[in-house]
Image 1 (cartoon, rainbow, N blue to C red):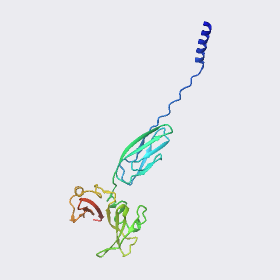
Image 2: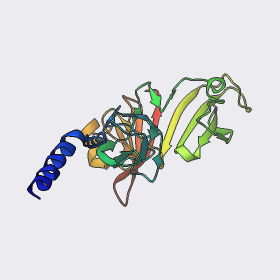
Image 3: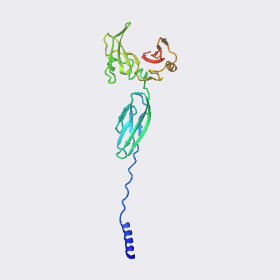
Image 4: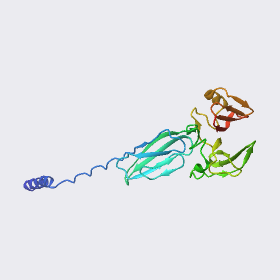
Length: 245
């Protein structure tokens, strides 16, 4: 009996040494969500590139905070309105997910005066060079006759911008130049000194000093060629006109 017990114990020891134990499965690589932004203070209407630097992920879901999403790895997005937006990236695979967030501030574009004009059109440009620009859908008015001068207004209502062409004829021609640019809501843009539609009269005067001429709700800075139309009820800028001084 003792011999049997001894044999069984010995056999148990031999089996324990002779059988290979299964190696545990290594843990799956950890998913890490991370991304860079090409500009964290973009202008409204500017393209922003999001560079995905996530690790161990194959599935990507972006939420840009303005109601738009994407499943691209490195998306490009345009924010049409100013404000603060929290960008969220959910990166994962079939087993894990991680989330990264960044906040950006979308600002008004400085596009009044930089090229002596507004947006991408300058004073002096001729109708023939601007009439087929893809980003504009012009509505043509006129002619407008003031004294001995003929003007042809062309409006882009969705952008809040009207270009006045100085006509050489009662009919508009490709050689007619832009002599005045009028801006109103919903135009998005500011001058180099930060004044745009919705700025206050005090902000205008703090930026540019006292106007050269004030007539009713018109505040004219003749020396630099800019006029601000002020809403008498709110004391805020409701229109801006640019002309050659």
